Image (cartoon, rainbow, N blue to C red; front, side):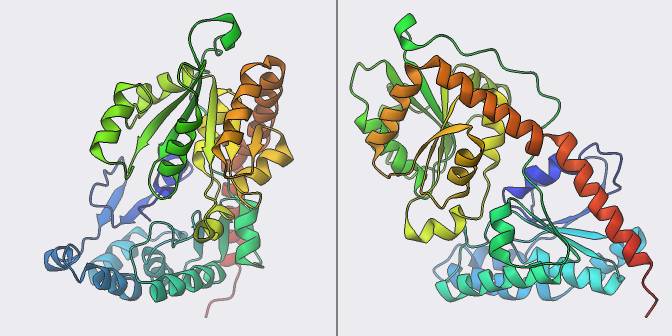
Length: 382
C-alpha cells in the first residue's frame, strides 16, 4: 500500500467493508491496523540517517530504483499463509513493484490504483523522476486490472484491456451541512471563500497573490486552511492575526470551516512543471467540497482535470487565467447572484450522485474484481 494521498482512498474503500478480508503491507511507519493483519516495512536505521544528510537525494534515488526488487522471506511467508485472491496496490511508489513480484510468486492477479502521477512531491534527481514516469506506465501495463483516478489519467496511461475509472468517492455516512447564510448585501459578515488543502508547491503562493488583490474592508474574504506552506514565520503570524490563515484542520473542525464558508476554491497549478500532474489527477478535495453543497470556483489551466470536469458538469465557475484578479471577479459574481450559486450546487449534487457516491463507485470496483477472479481461475494451470 502506498503512503501518498491514496491512503485515504484505500481506507474509505476497505475499512469496515465486509466484502474484503485484508492483509496490509505498507511502508508507513505510522500505520495503525484496524481489524486486519499487517506488515510494516521499515528501512534500516542507517539508511534513514543517510536520507537526512547531504547525500540524501542519492539515497532516495536508490530507494526508488531498488526497494521493490526483492520480496523478503518474512513477507513471502506471511502472504503465502494468507493466500490472497488478488494483490492490490497503489502504483505511485516502489511498493507497487514489490506487489508485482509478490503477485507473480503467488500466481495471483495484480490490481493497481493509479491516483497521482509519481513525480508529484517526489524526492529524487531528474533522471530518476523521468524513470519513475516510465515505470508508472510499465506498472499500468503489468496489472491485470487497473483503476485510474479519472478518465484523463487512463487516457494518458494508454490502452489497457481491463482499465476502469475509480473516482475518489464520497463517504456515505456524512450528515449534510447547514445551508450557507445569505449574501453580503443582506448581512454584515463578509462573503467567505475557503481554500482547504495542501499549501506546498505552487498553491501557497497563488493564495497569497489572491489575498493581495482583495481590497481592505471588502465584503469579500479569503480563508486558508492547510499545511506545508513555505511562508516565512512573520507573514504567517500576520495571516493568522487577520483571520486569513486558520491552520490545518481535520474532523469536526474541518466540517465547521466548510459550514461557515459561502464558496469554496479549487486550485490547479499553471506552471509548466505542473502540467502532467494537473492534467491527470482528480483531487479528493473536490468530493469534500461537493458534499458541502457550496458553490465552487476552480482556478486552473484549461487542460487541468478540475477545469475540464467543472466545464463539462457545470458545478463551478472556472477561472483559467493565472491572474488572481479574475478569481476576485468570479467571487464577486457569486456573492451577488444567489441563483447562479444554487445552479452550481445543483449541478455538483447531480455529478456527485452519478459518479462519486460510494454506492456507485464501490459496487462497480467490486464487480470488476470478481470478474477478473472468475476469468483468472478459469485459466489452465501452468
